[in-house]
Amino acid sequence: MIDVLLPLQDSEPDYYTDEVIRGMAIVMITAGTDTTTSTIEWALSLLLNNPEALKKAQIEIDTHIGESSRLLDDSDLAQLPYLHGIINETLRMCPVDECIIGDFRVPPGTMLLVNLWAIQNNVKLWEDPNEFKPVRFIEFKGQQEGFRLTLFGNGRRRCPGENLAVHVVGLALGSLVQCFE
Image (tube, rainbow, N blue to C red):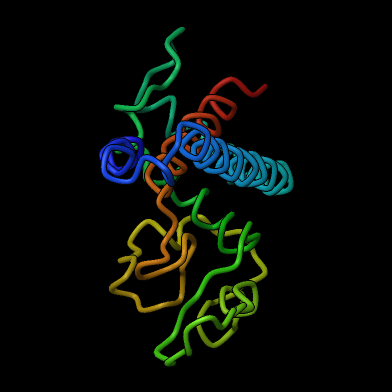
């Protein structure tokens, strides 16, 4: 984001002041921090209420990393599909934000709020939607599955922090699961 804003500051210095750029960065960090911590809290709550899922996550992490003193790191995340399933299932059951979806033409200036919770808990789209089942995301095809799961929005309004959020939540939640007794 900073790489985009600094050249704009050269071309429009009156608008893209240091204060504006700093403010945009603070808003992005604040928004990302709030949603990330909410996701981790919900994930821990769901895992504590589903001890078999917690045990399965611990086994996956121990199998991949080994029962060593090393904590998982960013390079381990790609090898932990069940952990990703936990994150996706948490976001499906407890979405932290609203998003815009659908094939409807919305006039400019219109604010559209979609009941994401209702979509992600619809019995026509999800088998046993009220049950915590991270395994449902092991073979999940993402966008190829349609708009059943739009955790970070869609289209040009899609959350720009999605990749960072998935990594931070994965590392934090994975470390907590790994160290949990």
